[in-house]
Image 1 (cartoon, rainbow, N blue to C red):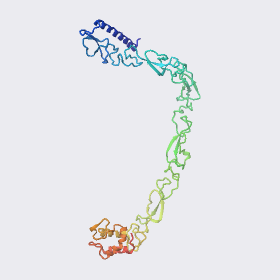
Image 2 (image 1 turned 135 degrees about the vertical axis):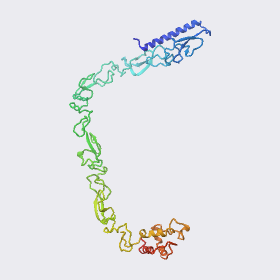
Image 3 (image 1 turned 135 degrees about the horizontal axis):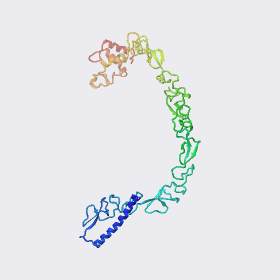
Length: 445
């Protein structure tokens, strides 16, 4: 049976001979002259490559559209096929219409009749030292090629099939993994044998190198030599884990088995060995040593429920403030809700109402600031200048205790003789008495 590529070659030869013959006839018919009166032969160029089909022709004194004087195209349905076209080797197509396809030849260095696929050249005829075959896997050794006899288990692929003669291993439990102690050689796979040799128990199909390991069961299902175990992180080495775990067959860094730990969870700070669920709590240090979620704290009894605690009556607790206790410890009389650091001092009752250590004292904050803000600051304010100060000396201001204290005596003199504040409103007798008491009791803040 003649192949398609052979047909193309025969066709190309035929076209070449036909073109020579028809050219000769043309010369004979025209007597070799270039007569303008005679009709010329034109050849159809269906693929537009500039080369005409010798079988499709017409005669005309002028060139018809789609026709050429050339008649050397061996395949006028493909513009890439014509004389002068680039030939593609070994594709079965005669692109340049020379009557043959270009052939790839392979170097046969060892002379065994099999070529090296990496050493090629192209030629219409066979070059010396080259063959059409490209299946030699070692062109330096004539004993290695696809026709050679394979030697078992020597690490050499003599017959170039990609492998050495296989070793097969007994697979008694049919799990696809073979017993390394039971092997044979064969070009084909024997019944009951596999290429794998990693089964560590060929009597149990659930044990092989591809099995899923079950943690902590004492069985090495995946044939690694170890049972899978659960390990718990203990970064600070206090024998308490914070609960992070991983499964591994060998011990990861800073991880321990449950049997090596006091607890596998409960360490709330695994960077500090002094902090874990078994540690002793230290009150009032802001650290939750025993990992209960809160620090132990000292709380103070608030018998009079004024929000201020008795420093002499305490309890240590964690998890929140106990009923009847507060975190504050600055109440100087926990039997009277009207006496505490937030109370206003009564300057006439002989009691230290605000727990500042002074009895019946008058202070800037409790008594005098309101008087200065309401009656004096309009003139003696640090943000008031010029005529708006209404005669108040520059720099004499009462915005703060620090500014008011140096000028307190002078201000009191003017307040008592009614020359300050200027105009109205004037200070009441009660306010004058308070200011005088402030001076008498030491101008306290």
